[in-house]
Length: 457
Image 1: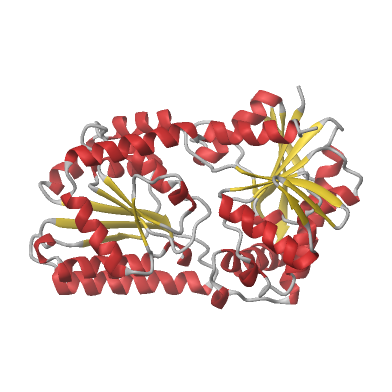
Image 2: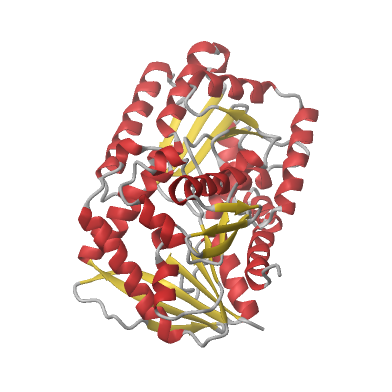
């Protein structure tokens, strides 16, 4: 069986007694365990003089090879180019882009360093699967080191339209870097179409279905929507509601309806608009006062970037304003929690909620909305209110789709959700659960690996 090599910005090394970080990490380690393989990337540490030789440890028949970053590379590659240039552009937020030549140099330098560290670990008979926007040039760097194994790349975030992409000064170089992969996967057909359009507009590429011919390269593209482990999510939610914290929370809610949002603290998640929508709900649907609680969990994220710290302060101000305007002695409408909670706790909260509010301004997929659906009681499910600009909106037609910039649209969808008859809620939930099973995390993993391993003749 062909060995699998996974490359990502961060590597999740299992530790005894600690749960593995996230469903995606579980899917990747499952694939590595099945094929036998190596996971390569940054160890999350910043050192004054990091070694150029990766540290390798073995856990459960999987090799984990990791490099540390210097402070300069962390600042300029990770915080700089990846998260202050690529992230905002790919999420349609040009105003947040901070393009600097030092960032570009660090991005190229770290990708070259990754390729230099990985190449000696390759044995010659592997599938190499590279993940996400941090590593766009890695394929080219590996090819320049005479790596000839099949190279696949998967983009977890959206791919911007060409008019947005070309605002990025180095977009031509990044597009050309991607041509060195054999297979490039996207979350949605829209993302793939945007990539094809960029290649045609920039290089006059030829597109023939899944095949791209451009500047002497021939590659394939595909759509692989990331999913969740549905059965595991359902079991976790059912177990969570039997635990003391969830039972106590249900009792505290009483007859009030819970609206819940759970996101990483990021400007792409539409949190400001979401808070404004809650205020709109309480203003225009006065009967929801005293009867409704909105809980927003916003896990801390990238606090070294000024925009994220400013967003946290803005949300704290909005929560205080709404509570100061509408709260009563026995009722606080907004519960804003800038903390990280366990996955089990989140699944219990999702199970208790009548409305899941997932309204990113732009998202590659968004797995929170899928977990919310899986967490619901199928006999009496809550309703998902979902941004039409999230990749998941392409699959979850049973959700109430909203424009995340339109606070009145969001407020009206919440009101409709809380009034929705049980039979309609059950029908919508069944439809979405069927889609989740069809496009599960394991199906996503297997489809991509199969397509990389078995190219069409």
